[in-house]
Image (cartoon, rainbow over all chains, first blue to last red; front, side):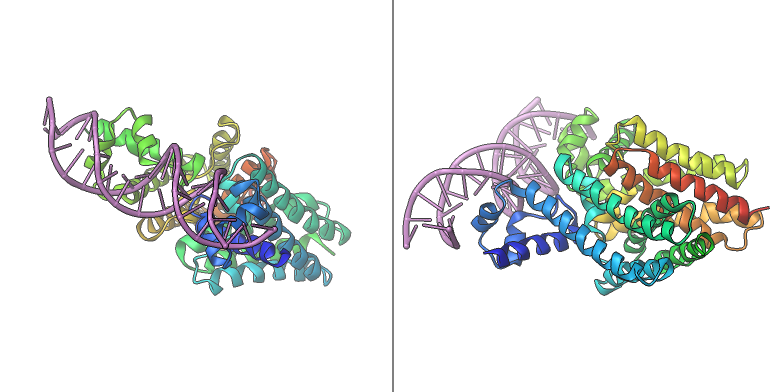
Length: 182
Length: 182
DNA sequence: GTCTATACGAAGATAGAC
DNA sequence: GTCTATCTTCGTATAGAC
């Protein structure tokens, strides 16, 4: 059933961003999705690596979709939406969740890692396109800074159990975006 | 012996930044340091959590020391030293190593996580002190942006197997530091 | 075709031999 | 006091019962 499959992927993505790759067991993913263990290997014959790869792609697409939607109102509003998204993830989960893509980037190898690289590149490109079309000359550079600093801030927020890093980073990024666009 | 103890801590820090917390076993740390498994529990009765905590503190102190030394030549040179440090870790290990503190931040709980939070705070304070003493009005904000964006860039570099994110972030941070200080 | 039960290995931690 | 051998638990993955 496609329903169960999607639930496994989304559930895996959620567990990955909370505990990391190696602390997330297939057993728990199956239990969390109320699916038997065998189903997991039925849907994902490639095992844990395949599940992790698809979870990263799912998380990547989810964020990309929100980012694209928010950017329709302009780069500043897009940035704000991006920041609000992460702020909600951080504070809405009592500082116990981070970014699925970062978690996989740090622990995974080959295929899942490649999916993580694609996720970052996609977000960077979406941001750069918007910045460029609004007159920014350093669009690629600024887009990379936004992705890197927000992801880094999410890590700091989690460790320090505070939303302050994200707020500080957001304020400065907004100034930079305003200055770069017209 | 204190020699073996230090070797266990340093070796653990290195393995943590490569594989992450949960993929780093006490067995391998002991083997890597050419110490028997029992020694590890002799030196670190608190088990894996204690070892991880001390590894984070060791990594934190190592970076803090380099940061302080480089900042003596001013904020811009300090930033450059900070960037060079991470660039060397990334490229010198074929994009297979990242930051010990980030790895622990994403996977650890309680004590080790608190050590990670302290590490980030320490680096932020060191940078903020330098920026403030050189006339920056937004010293704390800028220090947070530096730590967050560099740590985030390290994650991106690893995933994308490229030093470009760190270069892009570094160039923009240098402009910001120049503009903020006098 | 779905799911339960199990195989097999490796993890953290400890007890007890030298 | 140092280290080896072992206990227990949990991981991934699979084989075979419904």
